[in-house]
Length: 310
Length: 52
Image (tube, rainbow over all chains, first blue to last red; front, side):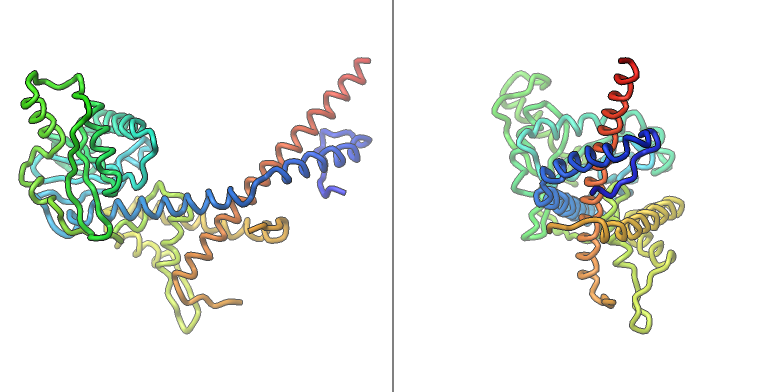
């Protein structure tokens, strides 16, 4: 017998029939529900989020700890508060030049989709220049550059795809074994249509210009620069389980009992070096507390109502 | 009650609970689909019997 209350719309005389049909339907669906692979996918999601966060950390570390060619790390996920597609980080040299960076820890077989995604995000940035100037920099932008940061094993593929698509993105690659980062250029198999040069040598020079930074000293400083991970602790657009790590990390042990309060979480998020405003930190902590409450309250139902196959 | 002292252990527990929660959500969606499907089916049968 299926333990379900038929909805009010079902007539009294039909309730038993409802239970019978519902029982068959749900039995059929649950038999076909492939729980194992779904659990694997969810764990994969957590892992991808972790790798993404790690790559962002690698990409911004030199600009948080130092000032390569005058560039400083300004913000993670610029424009995320507007709910528009955004890049992962923003750097600024205090002299009118900014760099928007996107971290891609894994690359799909169709790398063109990544380039197209970056092009769209670039358009969004261009539509919000005034907002960025007013809210983040307090100064005017004279020049913008866009970076795709990825792990070294994907570097050639992405740099070549970007060149062949005729896109103006610069590829940074991170080697997590040696904790170093550098700029990767790759020759395209065909020259893109939009090159403003006729001769092959000029075309190659134009490609080099297009895929390196206009502030020349930055190209030199980013040549196998030492970097590290661990800075990007919380990203507002991560899945909730990734953000809830912060609650775990900010917890204290008082007389053998673990405890965490709002102030602990706020301090942890503020110290995460990602330069969120006080107001934004407060909103993020609200989301964390709400997300944590949902997870805990739903868990009770889950424990009694489900038979986990994991 | 387990008194977790290691933050890595806690993260693992958190991840496991989140996966359980998402699986539970997916199963709830299936239950809702069945409820709607059977409700519609019975509603149509009722309309048909009234028409006949």
